[in-house]
Image (tube, rainbow, N blue to C red; front, side, top):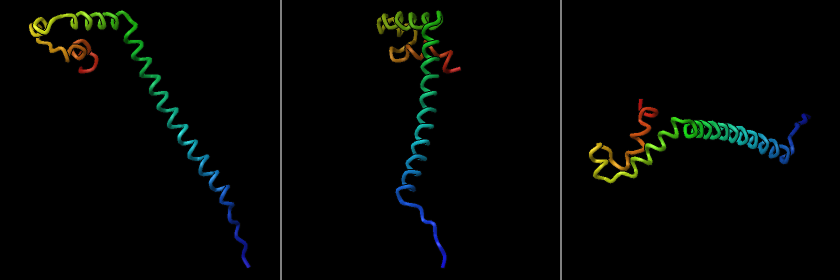
Length: 90
């Protein structure tokens, strides 16, 4: 006669739940770290003098009329792209 060691279903379920919880926590920590890094970069860009100059430039261009922007060959929807193009579209 052979004896089989069959685990209790509750133990199996608890082990699976704990493994899933660990994976979810790791993924959550990863995306949290990515979010904090992006927020830090964005904050650094906006708080240094160059970032403030860019924000002032955006405000200045947004205060212009559509005709004045047309003279500069800038569409109103493209103002932010125009001001930040050297950072994102190198």
